[in-house]
Each structure stands twice: as C-alpha cells, then as structure tokens.
Image 1 (spheres, helix red, strand yellow):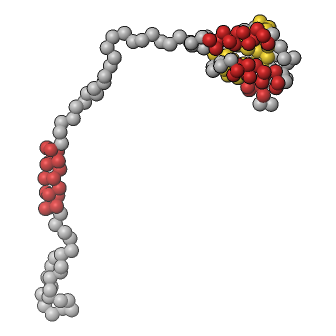
Image 2 (cartoon, helix red, strand yellow):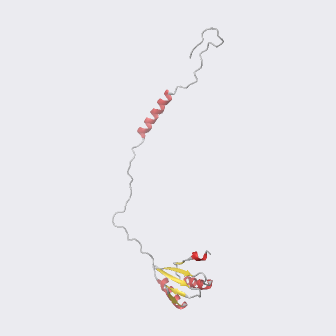
Length: 142
C-alpha cells in the first residue's frame, strides 16, 4: 500500500483494508477442537455379546410329510397307495388326532376335475387337519 504524495489526481486518504484477520478465528477454533478432544470419553473397541453358555438345543426335526395325489379320473392315493373315500377319511382322522400333525401335501394333476380336489380338501377340513398345502401349482400357470 503506497500513499501518493503530492497533488496528483488521487486522494490523500489511505485505502481501507478489506481483508479480515483470520489468525484469531483459527486460534479460537483450535482451542475449541482441543477442548472437544479432551472431553470425549475414551472409546471401547470391544463389543459385548451375551453368548449362550453350554450346549445348544437340538435342531428341530423335519416334519413328517404325507403326499396325497389326485389323478385325472378322481383316484386319490395316499403316499402312492390308492385309497377309497372311507379309507381317506380314516387316515385323515388319524392324522388329525396326532398332537404334532404331519404336513399334508395335496398334489392334483392338471386335468383333474375341481370337485375331486375339493372333496379331499373338504374332508381334511371337516376332520380338523390343519397342516395341508397344495403342491405343484406351477402346472396350472399355462
């Protein structure tokens, strides 16, 4: 910053300084960072887990599966053996009487009449069979 002396066309007033002095601001920020670092508690790098003590329980056994197939002419087979409606009711009643019922997988063929499949499902519902499901539904997507 130079000052002009004399009567040249400029003014004799010194120029105003527009830059801010950053040194005090940086000093204050450094003090605040140091105080923050001091007040933060020491971090534990360990993760506390409650792990089971002793032997684990045995894995659950897979459920017993009974396959009921309904053929195109309405023939019902229980695990590959053809049964009549009276035998089917007796076997479903025996399944319903068990405390841990086996899973019933009902597999109709694609061309079976609906009434044959509905009769098997109605018998299972009437006899309180709770674990029944349809298997092979992908054949009906066509």
